[in-house]
Image (cartoon, rainbow, N blue to C red; front, side, top):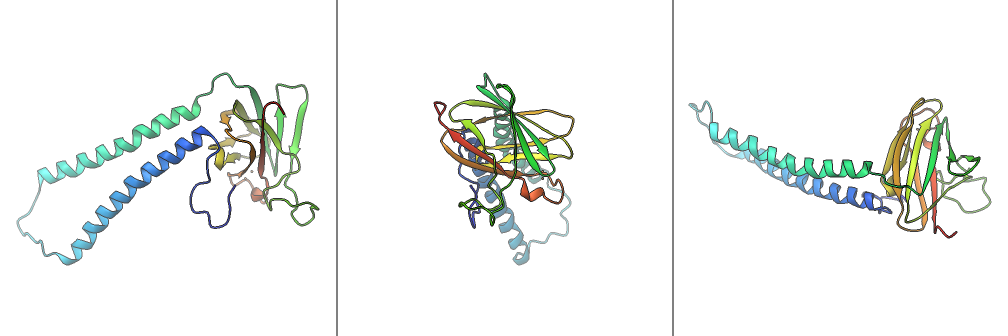
Length: 218
Ligand code: CUA
């Protein structure tokens, strides 16, 4: 879960989030190299006296500074596309969880079982008699088995919400009148938190998502 002053991404709890972090780091390295190069060149402009009254064009340098960024972009685009298609891949899920966004809470349905559905509201931190996670704890948690492919169906009843769990690499919009699909693979037991990430109204900040990951035997 997110803790104070956490500047980086949360630790991953799924294989896909691990890949997303690798891709983020890879892209950031390229970004830093470009920033240093351009910064160095810009600072140099203030101090050098390279002036040429008769300079009109430079075919060779323009060729070079067109091709080098193109190659650089390919190094970002190809891993990005690989990740994009990996995130969409779902084969033979064990169970399906349907999550429905409302103003302002989530409700869930376990469609594989008869009539298992419930609402999930945020708990008031001050009025609770047990320790809880402020602004992140809910009254009814989602319980899912670890080390299994899980299908998530996402929709909404009123406005657009977004079902987002940073540590599992899931972020998918919940649209009224539409059914979106994503997938999940949790590789350890624990509790994982998420929040709505579409600006959906006054209590947008107060519709957390809480997943309890347990062994399939339980
Ligand atoms: Cu639901 Cu923001």
